[in-house]
Structure formats: structure tokens, C-alpha cells
Image (cartoon, rainbow, N blue to C red; front, top):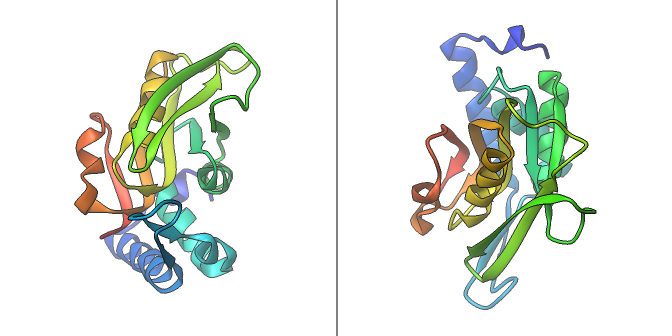
Length: 190
């Protein structure tokens, strides 16, 4: 799909969003008390394993920022989203990794999440980020720390986050409130 194909009628936009939402609602597996007691884990693996569901989600996410020139997927399920959306948009893709997975130098940001703390990293050299327009993707928005940390890293590197998108937003956890000024899209919001 070229960037020109992403200019669509409101009807097509609605149809695409409805297909993606239906696939996520139908195929997501829920696991209580995982990875720790009190957390309810949304497993999107069945959505990604379903060809039609996966494509519907990718189409929906790609439409969030057709002017992006780089797609960033957050470790680890965001890698699947980032690669697919980058291919649709005809852009590059960069993986936002968990700490310790990349050789130095790196841009790094620590953050807290609903069951602990962690850090994310991207390369500090080898990929020119200054002035790039980034679409930031993750699978689930819960408390918002992961997505906000990823956005901060790109800002520190001189890039502009033009939009962020997630497959599933757990709105009752308030993660949207922790995000920056960029538009944030959710395929499904609970």
C-alpha cells in the first residue's frame, strides 16, 4: 500500500476500523494473574496469527500517520506491528528494545509499569534520527509508562513523534494521560 492509498473515504476508514476492532475483540486471549498476581494479561498472539485479523490491525495502524518516515515498534510484540506497518507505508522500521539488548552507545529511558520497572533503548548511532517523523507502535496501552518512555527516547534523539498507536487500550488504567502532545489511536479501548 502506498501513502497515496491511505487517503480514504470516511466509509472505508470506518469499515477498516470495524474489521480491526472485531478481530481484536474476537481473538484476544485473557489471562488473569499473569505475569504477576492482580494483573490481567491481554494476549494478542491469536490476533497476529490470524491473517485477516493481522492485516486489518496493520491497515488501521498504518492510517494513523501516513506521513511518518520511520515506524518504531516497542519490544516485543510491537516489533510485529512495526515491521508490518513500515512495509505498508514504505518506510524504515526501528525496534525499541528492552535494556541490555543493544550494544552501546544507546539512548535509554527508565519507566515504571503496572508490575515493576524497566528501561527501553534505541541505538545512539548508526541510525540518523534527528528530524525524522516517527510513528510509535505498541500492542497494549496500560499505565502508559512504556509508550511515554519510548516517545521520550525519540525526542531526546531529535526525532518527532507524529503519532502513536496501540492495538488495545486499557483506559481504566489512565495510560493515555501520561502521553505527550502526539495523537494517540487505539484499535480497541476498554
